Image (tube, rainbow, N blue to C red; front, side, top):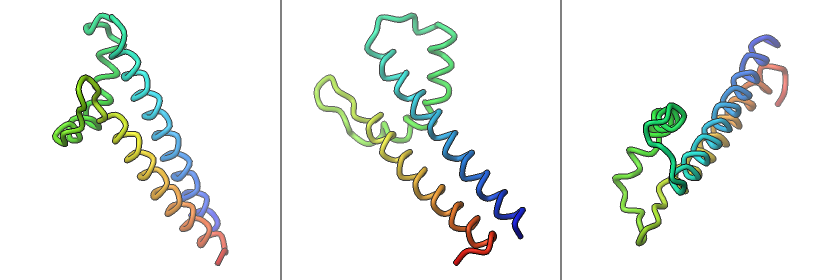
Length: 101
């Protein structure tokens, strides 16, 4: 049972790592949107390919005020909540398999 607990703990760390990388990619995309960069650059294209599946469904919600688009802020909040829920759940399961509770 100890091994199963360690697997769940490793999954929790993986989820945490992936969401952290997505945070930074969203942040980079926000910064790039304010700068005069080449939209056909391979880095910009890569950031768009990774972050568009997160931002596209949220863009249906009207979150614009003038020139400001608050969609990335909502994405940050949802990623944070998803991270907290999944990591807490996985760590709780890991703790139970390791003999806790």
